[in-house]
Image (cartoon, rainbow, N blue to C red):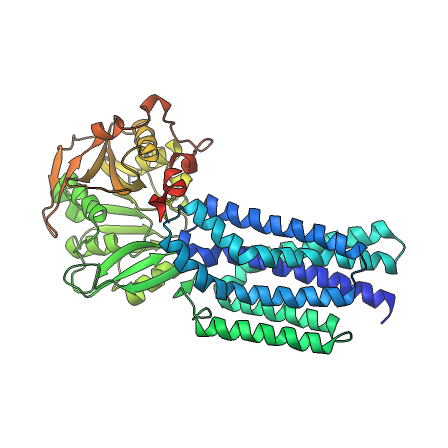
Length: 506
């Protein structure tokens, strides 16, 4: 092989190995999402640990190159990285039960998942570039030219891998098929290096990969966890008959959080207390007008609330902004949802509201928590002003928030932010709460009409709720230390950190 062809081959391997590493990094976030969700903390763990492994691999590869590492060593490293990649799916079947049973907080669990699954593959793939760069310098006296070329190819490979995984591969092939493909490609590249030097060792490593793959298959590691891996979520629809009374119900799970439970035969029966409460607040506030009200739902999920409104108020106008079209499709196909007559917008709720006329809606419902975190741009003062403009004078804005009862800083910040725009803001919770670590509260905001101190369900499950605003504002951190959320300053992760740093988030 000529020097020119060798340099091309070395550069191609650097490019591909870097691309495959970034594909694994993007896949990492999706693989752990069903267990710890998706948040700033999970992605920080993914990026930090992968970069840590890459840095260690670069350092080890440089030292190894100085000690004479060549094509044989590159081949071995690629074959071992192939084995470690397929082992990700095997190790997941071991780690997941242990971490879930240990009741570790979300931050710790995220760190352990990524460390256990992706640190070794990242380290091994980090070895490749410095070794091949050193070998390239021996073939071409222009050291700066070779180093620059290899670094550029590594960066370009990383960019390609990132975009390919995020924009295309995951949605069309799924995470497990991608991990298997990465392992196969690494094995092929490694074999091309090692074939000339040690066929016996290559065969041994092939057998190792086969054994790991076989064990992973037997443990169910290749079985797809999600019904659909969309651009936004790992989506599952599960039988909820054991979760609810009266049976025959299904639930939608996005990543690791249940986002709605729908009865097959009772579309207006709302099992989840906070969903039921939001519906009751609307009925109480609007009275008979609720039957003909114009609704805007920020977030569709299982479409539990829009489905209920359509059932009990067939004359109502329903607009739903659900960013993920696959969520809508699965709700229609498997959650008994009929969207005929609904105006479905597959776009961000804020963008959807911006496109609407002012004073168009009687009700805006915010149900946008995708996990223990919420899109911050749908909590800010500027967004609340937008909601206020789109509501009629007697309109109502209801939204939910997950927080901890002993110091609900995010809840209080949302209350303070809403109060900067709306005349009346209340916080609601069920009457009976015992030994709860985390709770889904409901806030209501409007410009007219004072709400009562207690509410009893008029239909469906017998429930009572109370206005807990005064109690909440007097709990934990003083209100003068609680920020108003704005587009320029929305420390949502800090305010909800207890959900991540303590065991409440799992």
